[in-house]
Image 1 (cartoon, rainbow, N blue to C red):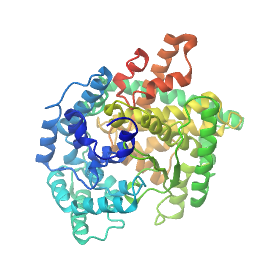
Image 2 (image 1 turned 90 degrees about the vertical axis):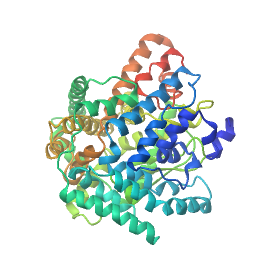
Image 3 (image 1 turned 30 degrees about the vertical axis):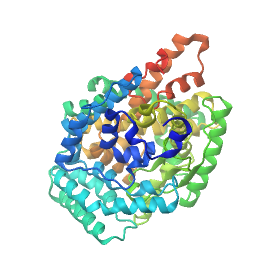
Length: 515
């Protein structure tokens, strides 16, 4: 299946790919269903029991052929190695409810990739399998640390939003009760340790990782960002310091209803600027704005794009207002994330030139199931993070320093994530200390800072934003040196995105013509 048939089906693809790739897809069916748009997986759940995971690990690379393209072979091998590390060495399924949450999540059927009745039927099939899937999850989740349980309890409870099937509700309640018990009774220690963190970070990226060197790079980046922030604060208001000015700017936030309107207007403005500067081809398509479903409100903003194996349908840029049950002061602190200073940078990250535009470029890839379906998380987030600063370099809102200030504040958040995960999972930093780092270095307050620190307990690779960005910038420097006057941002970006979402260790293929 190739060309337009391949792009528009979303089903009938699974049996046509290399069995090695099929084994990776089967291991990560929730991701492949939603983000690649392979709807052969609609209504299916993965066996997340210990025996199910062991069987899935054993299947990786056990049958199939070498991919004919060297880059695709390297990418597929990295995906296999990453899954072996995550579920063999690190045993995510034993301690991380989030991987089970993804397996159960029904919100993948909300996006309009097919007629409502088709999606509803798939949702009902999926829901009917909850009791069996949750039995497997409960068998696996025997090592959930208390901080991880606390961080994931809200999203697990959110699974029940809109569910009326009594069997499914009873099954979900058993899972919720299991996580609640872990909150109260489980061990407080959650750190992975250096060996497991190294494997989790590096294996899927086809890249050796020196945690000490990565920490040094993070420190250097934090210093650079702090200097740029101070310069632009001085430009905005001479004599001001970031500690004085940033809280004031973050307090200038819209109401919840205005967040959506502002985001829509920003999409138009930033897309027009991206095309005017010839940074990327026109992404086309439709991107809607609205809140995420309850089970996905652990993040403040996220993109739910269309997949390359399905018919073109609107993507969703989710922005998440605060919980109305919070006290007013805490709600205002959360809304500061969507201030007039930071929302533009968030929108560049999530939409264009970030995630949405990246996804639209992947839709144009033909002839490679690997590039169309497999994604390096560090590249995906690194690209979107790179896109924010790219606009500063190109002069977006150059006369208003608030855009640049927002980019530096967001970048300080991302580099603090890298510092936090390196600290917490090497057991040199507590959640409380990480929370204070987010408050001091990233200008966050209250529940927003605490939420970021807790995210690191169950998402130990969330330093990927800064890491991926740094690798892309390093490659761009190499492209400029190698291509000379033949270099342009658009040429570099198109060569890079022609690889899809490549592991960081394979980025050089974009310069070597292995595309």
